[in-house]
Length: 248
Image 1: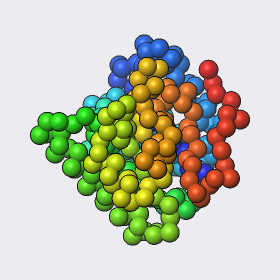
Image 2 (image 1 turned 90 degrees about the horizontal axis):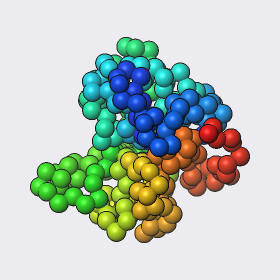
Image 3 (image 1 turned 30 degrees about the vertical axis):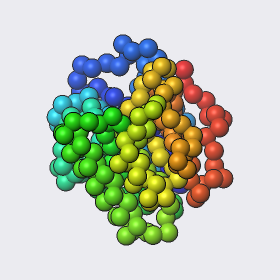
């Protein structure tokens, strides 16, 4: 049983929003599916950290969910800035259940325990928030992250909390200090985030150790459409060292 993560699938099977127009995204759904099937088994779990579907309404995302559902493993869905279809957790859970998409669950103010790892997280927000509205959103996201971490501790205080965000908590010289403060105060050692695309933008994404936290960029195009094995003290015997073939 392994835990993987990937972000920014940007699926559009139910709407006209092809990603193939962007450099590096040609045939990306086929590449993603081949890579996923090469590395993920039915007993594994994959966190999808936001920007899942271009659909505007929940019902319009059905074809994208169907694509995800037919891939191996359990999937934990998170909200990204482009997930306009996102509704309440209850409505999404009910929709997935009614459609038979039983391999998917939603991470929103809660946590999941998988093989000794506590899966925690929230969308996050901009690292240069200045307006009054931005401040409100940041505070709300801090509350959701805290609720997720609290739920993890309640479910299994021995599990190592690993945090998944959509927005990076730090980018270049800018940081979302409120989110970072939570990570530091809760002694989080691993943080995975998406949102950043393209070679130039990814160069400014902070990766590696930052304030004692290992930062990982896992946007679909950055990881070449390959789900990434999550690093934690619980699974250090594993590695994602390139031994799996990446579909080009």
